[in-house]
Length: 288
Length: 281
Image (cartoon, rainbow over all chains, first blue to last red; front, side, top):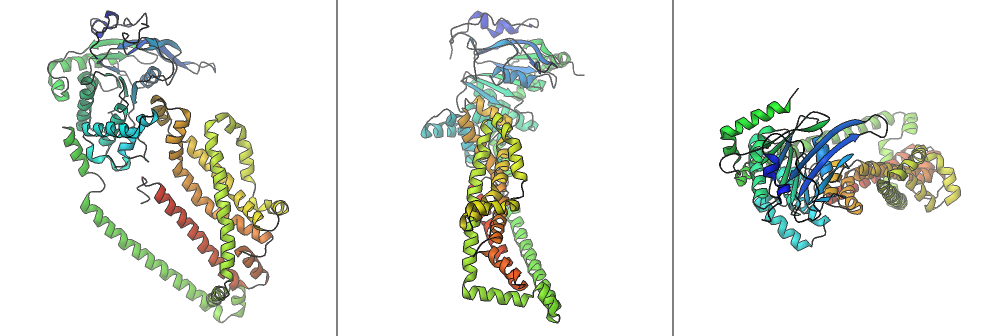
């Protein structure tokens, strides 16, 4: 957990100062214990190259994610953020560059990654509890162990009384909490979240963001959050990476230093630094 | 703090007490009213029918009469022929329904595993599906004889392609993001099928079951029309050939009851197997 990261992968250096197009993630480290949990080196994606009408979605993106770190990626809509996420978690092969998990080039789907989208993707035929158990069931964990783990998670996300409810009987916020619990149940090291809270109302969103921060920071996980919500990115993250329009590249990278308790989303939003970060990122986003 | 959010969420849940029970009372009352109007409608129609045929032997001959239909029904019940015919046709329908759906659904779901094979088979399936099954009856009788087997074959053929197409649609219509979710959890193809594709297809499969119950009955009756010595289709055909319209109507009403019982049974099983479908409960 407290294993110090080597200098090459230190986010504090990679993320400070002027915007960096290519954080130093190479050479990939062969030892799985010392590489950053996740790094992308110069990855790009072009669709439709085979039928002669290629569309370049992502030109070149590099970044790294250190243990215990929350990094947000913001970008104008349609810039390929979801494509990026799918490449990072092995669901889509990049046309150039490489993704590294613990310094090893990714082959297939990474073992300890948790993936969550804006759609809760809950299975309507499973109760909240059974939905949370899904990942553990796939991994073949015994019934008793599964049950204990899922019930602990339900408790921590304030869902204790709702284990036996079907998703159709839950509100949007609660469904997304169940989805978060399902993502956390297999104990992932790295969470990959794609606009997970953007369909929720403001109040629900703040609360679930807070729970997410608590569950990530408190347990030494890392979080890569893809969002178009600049305020969410700034209030939650250690670093924010700003992407350009298509074909997408890294425009800027900010280290977010906010005073006070980083688990309190409301306090974070009240500081003057918060407003400065938001304003700067908005300018860089180049909304047309 | 998340507790509070959940508590406030809970207030807006269905299952809150007051409004729900009020709605239920209202629903029950509307159901009673609908039922009353339906019964009234039947009584009025039957009375008009009876009245129109009472003074005209020609009308009675051509269209039958409710009183004569009732007489035939009573006779059929008394001599027990209705039970023989009903059980024979019911068995043919049920067996064909089960076999056709089993085959069709198994193939339809299996095709999920290979886009290539399903593309190869697509035109053949469409061609098979576009054959009017009635037109197959003469061949089926040559192949399977005049007994139970030919009716079973007719009922099965009426069901199998529909079941196949519907279950294939259900299996391939699964949200690709849900498949990605399963892949991100490290699920193998077999696990994706068992934990996601199969349960997700059940809604469509049950829609298919409701539809094909009627198809199987049509298949069995057409088979009996072609050649048979027992069954509802046989009885209808015989009475029709003898111009006993009221007896045809009596047998028809028994057939309708069989169809309704079958579809009600499917709905019952669906409610039992899909407890998460709150719209069904």
